[in-house]
Length: 185
Image (cartoon, rainbow, N blue to C red):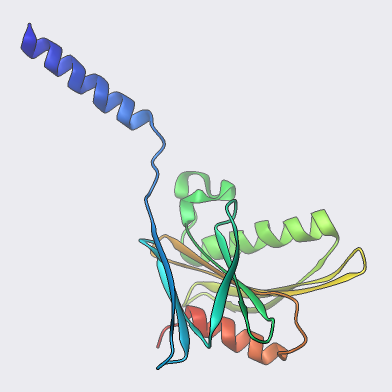
C-alpha cells in the first residue's frame, strides 16, 4: 500500500511538472571594463555582448526583453536575448537559422508598418551568419523615427540589437556598430 501511494505521488508529480510552463532562470550582469573601454552585458544562459565604449543601463522592456542603454553622447541602443521558440510566429519551433531571422524581420517590421505607418528598409541580409540588418523610419506625430535593427539567430538564441534615432552617427557607423555586436572575430 505504501509503495502504491509513493508511485502514485511520484506519477502525479511528474504529470503536474510537465504541465507547468517551463521558465528559465537567468543571471543578468553589466559592467564597464575601463582597460578595454567596453561595456559587458550578459543574460545567462542566453547570451552576452561587449559594447564598445561606456554605456549606462536605462529602462528595461519586460515584454520584449530589451535592455536599453545610453552613452555620454545620448545615443540609445537596445539589446535583447531570447529563445527562438518564444515568438508567436514560430509555433512548433519550425523556423531556425536564416529562416527564423527572415520570418522575424517580416513579423517585426510589419508591426511597425501596420501599426504606425512607418517605412522599412532591408539593409543587409546574411544567410551564412543568420542575420538581417534593417531600418525602420518615418514620423509618428511629427516625431522622427529612424531606428536600425540587427536580428540574428545562433543555436536557438535570438540576438536583437538596435540603435534608436540619432543624427550623431552616420548610417555606416550604425551598421558597423550593430554588426560588431553580433559577429565575433
